[in-house]
Length: 520
Image 1: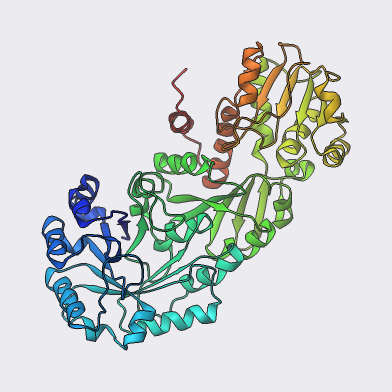
Image 2: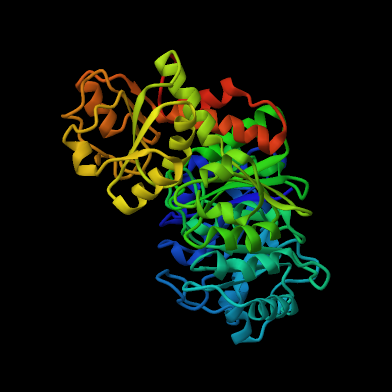
């Protein structure tokens, strides 16, 4: 079982000793697998005596000592591992039974040391040889060379942390993490930044699984971009339960940091006992490339697809159901090695169900103004048209909205005319990202020209009550929250992913709790 190593952002060792959160984690039962990293260059009060006090306060085998080298950063540790004082410290780590000692690959190379020069062969302290690239990724040949040389230095564990610009830049790291055969030691592979969440979460999936992943303490900013908290690892992603048999699902979009889909689906997996993990992929690149080249290598079994990839992702699918083909957009895709991707659209059915519940009847004959021209608008407007509603499309991008209206046989109105009251709709559906966190004060269309009986349906669900819905509520409009649609489409996705009925009550409760809503 892979563990979770929390990183220290403390300024002094005294703060480390007094931290109740660290004490709680390191004194939990051993099967919980928590470790704590001490970055020696961080501490203003660092002395060997204080470190030994840390060793007496916490189980040493749960500690990871990261050696900063010769004034590599701003800390007070200025001596070299090759000098007498440095050797004295490392011997103290060994005698105390420290779990891991992390030393930079380049530093070891400069002084010409290997593990045998630092630790006796009988030592229980494991040597991590690490390399960081702070500006970009590296090609696969360079990564292989690094891993080979680190193993040659006697590494018990190899750590390679990169800062890829995107998934194309991260592909060589994924390829290295998937390799087996020639490698003898575990690899901690990290793609830093929000786009690298997969590397921090999926280590247990790969050959030569790492001993742990890195996490931040609650309320801490962590020590590297993209770090999750230990609580997110343990509760949302059930990290201690992951294994090579765990099935991988996720969401692609730009942005995805706001998305509650990982919370929704991972909670549903846990409730049903389904062996899956669902993770975010912040994708700014071509989704077709991602779905054909990156995702199968993990492999990802299924995807939720959100803005702005719903239309383009359809081109990655070998198969798609009739509804998805007719709409021209998908929000769900399943992968099978023998047939590739199959696309579905659960946005459409969820939107119709939400509206019929709100209207307490059929949509036939209703005039519906849809604001937007992307994949979400397309997914909503097409089934409305099929249900017999009079659908009118408008957006701030007239070329796109005219194209959508033509494709589905709907009407089109210029955005300015819609704002001035030229369209007296009974329902207005907002299907763009406007008003989504963090830009929560933006509104998609002013309501001054619409009668107060017009139903407002905002597909943005975070925040729950957008600025537009707040404005509508003040004017007396009936409103329909986007989270109801989010739950319905997510429940349908869950059934596609697992073949199981969605645990709707649990899914609703975790989303309501996250959005800080009470029970109705």
